[in-house]
Image 1 (cartoon, helix red, strand yellow):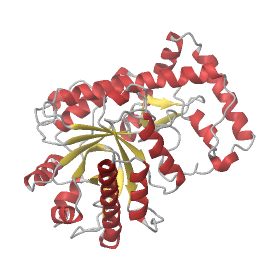
Image 2 (cartoon, helix red, strand yellow):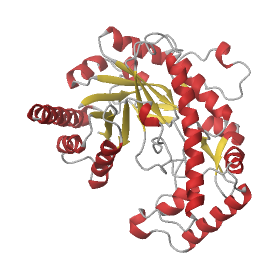
Image 3 (tube, helix red, strand yellow):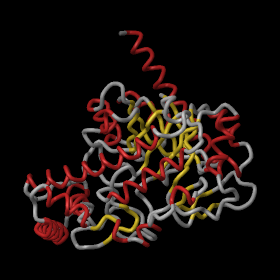
Length: 406
């Protein structure tokens, strides 16, 4: 399995020995956050301080007026890092050491912009805005994502471009101190994640549906699910009583908007410098095999398989569900598209046998390990990072043996 380790710019620049640790770990590539959402990130290797407080989403490259002039939606610059081009400096530092680098971009997850401009956010059937979620149905959002991509990659030499939140986010997301966990079941959460903003309504109208009737039907079904104690199946049952045709319409219009967003982003990648476009930097998409999923890893659309080199699936929670998702992804995606497993070494509940878990994901069809997180995992978690990489190497050995046997 190919191993990509994730990191923030300050992990590379602000903690001595990062390059050595990455090389000793044996990762094939380091994904550096270039455009990223708000976070409070631990810095266990930093000489001073214990965490970086990124108060809002930011572009860790110069925010050039020439690129953003006249636009309402524009990224903010981070004042919590020392350099204007901290991501660029981190990419160049790794490149000079001979470490391949991926540019890690978060696209539609931006609470600062969503709060300032609620008209471009995902809006549920009750009219509530999700400020953390910019809606891909809107041309202004798609243009922002494409320009953000172009500016993120400007004059950088990278081996891959990792796209996170390249689609729609929904109801289930950590927002300040989250108090919705385990209150809604999966069916209600799925319907609360259907965007009902004017842009999405216009798409429904174009398809022959009445937006107000659609919103009313969604509200009634969500209320019935909540009132009925929508927690069957341990919160995993997504069944609802919407007409099949309506469900198909909602998914089809969402997928069309996602495809348009991704098309603009990929056009920006291709139009970039030779080090990104012409040399064939890999396109890595964070996604989910369930087409209804919203969030940082949104559901795959039928069109995306021909446009990316790798699809990374969420595998933070070990168990049969993650293994099954990998197997399903491998079965449904074309052979030339790699399946990646997104695994964390900094989970609240450490995996007892991380090497065995990663190897199991490899047996299920994963060809890549996406390892979270080289900066957050301090000395006490170093062995977990090493175990995950060891599991990936074990899976690689099995894959080679299987290929040879054929």
